[in-house]
Length: 262
Length: 258
Image (cartoon, rainbow over all chains, first blue to last red; front, side):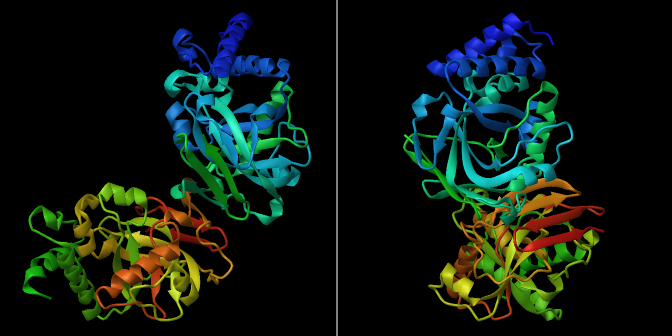
């Protein structure tokens, strides 16, 4: 680790400020070119701490960089993650103001809601399936506090995995009614198909992606409590959003989830 | 065959015979869409004359992305002949082709004749006996898949082979629009998609085909197979490759390349 606790806290303060003001900052890796992924997570913890001390709560996690193309773009071979804060969760049909974000994009994802907690160094996809109470259609609005998305891996990790908000369908489907890998999804913008995908786009299998998260959290003493929402990763390339448009992801068996960008 | 199309047809048949890609016809000759369709008919006729039956049709350029790439706003079609059928479990012999590529598709087996200028997606579904997860084998007769819309129309939509999966599904109660598809090559994930990637719904693509055929006084017959169009990008294959296309509810199709 190259980063001092003081410097990590400074960077966290800058990112949190950018989240509050909507004014982007230069890539952290510009001023600190030696930043590592571990440093990124240290900064991320500082951002999360600020949310918590402002009264927010952690309701789950999001996975990022779950597709080969995204991993190749950032030169990594694993995903990244960040907590999802209660204040970032929106209900199906929510109107979201593009002006609340810096450079927002939308992704359709499968969310898993855990009925039982998950922890440990050996968590498998099967453990995830057993612990999952419901499968839910979701959208993630990703955003970057780093100007123009000029992110390297430590930048996006520090910036809470470029998270912005999530939209969750009101319908939860039992896990044994779906094949997470083959679950199809159609993403439309004002009724026009702009992407399609299936669950396997998330690290080969959304349940495997969650198992990776549990194993990765373990050395830090973290785990997923019952009730956690896990956003398992995009099923298609993220789409930049424009105010005045309605985005809808419809999932086989799970139904639709809609976000209106105003 | 009109005298005007003969040189086009010869070029394409020669490419098949010698397993060597040719240059686009439009490089050296004027080729409008009507002429391209006449060339296509002649190319298909050559297969029929060799003793093979027409067993169905296929669609190409069914995704908006591919249409934009080609600068057109519609798909195209070609005919399937019995010599193109590869039974599920059989190998793909790459040396029978010039530059084979494969793509996952949803296939329709018609239980009734379908023809007419006003056929809708709903009527396609009602006339469908069974749906299959399928793999389309493309083999452009143009070197490097370099062609214009009219070139590929003349080349029978690059059609070369097709494999239907081993699970025949009743289309009733299945929303093919949302049907997920996962394509793997040699165990690695290549792409995922859902049925809507094919003109919004695979049955809409088939309906478009029936309406397009009606303009030429043609139609589809009971027993015909229709390959509705690629759900993902086409993937090049070589001897030793194994490609698996998995479809939600429709099972999977695997093809080993030799």
